[in-house]
Image (tube, rainbow, N blue to C red; front, side, top):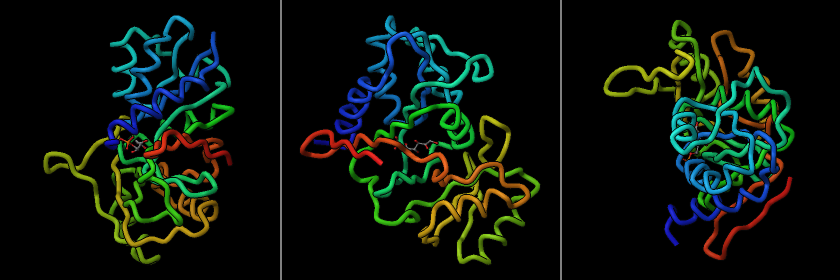
Length: 223
Ligand code: 5RP
């Protein structure tokens, strides 16, 4: 099975976590796009979605799914999103699609986080994938130095030769060279650095379930 087929498989499998009549939290990325396609087939059974990015909002609306503002709704039953890495305890690295801040917000508003991913995302220790960190532009060079002091190489994410600007008007640093052996401590530490909007380690908002696409089918991991 190709990686794309595995993404389709887990996107469809996530439908069983969608609660009829409720609003579902929707993440961002190519795997989530498969989930949105699947969600469109049962759109009459849900009230709508809270989205984690302009990209997902556009796709949801194009498929006729109502998108609610996070501030206009209460707690969500479930949040469905992909990951760049997930470990055996449900801790993740996210933000490859630059949507990490809104993803963390919607995850925090949801009772259950269901991660959908192909098996290439499962890792022993987080840190192989360059860690995305959303930062306030004026702090970016100082934060590059701060990551260097802990052994990481941080690079400003570019798009068309210019700093990529997120949906929130901020920049992204991608940090390599980190071994994140204690994700909770790491998230707590880096989140406090002035200028950091959101660190892409999701340990405090970790997954409760991961639907992992494998050659043998969908494997359900519960944390
Ligand atoms: C976006 C994310 C995505 O969930 C993550 O990058 C995985 O994306 P994909 O499903 O395309 O592999 O965190 O900010």
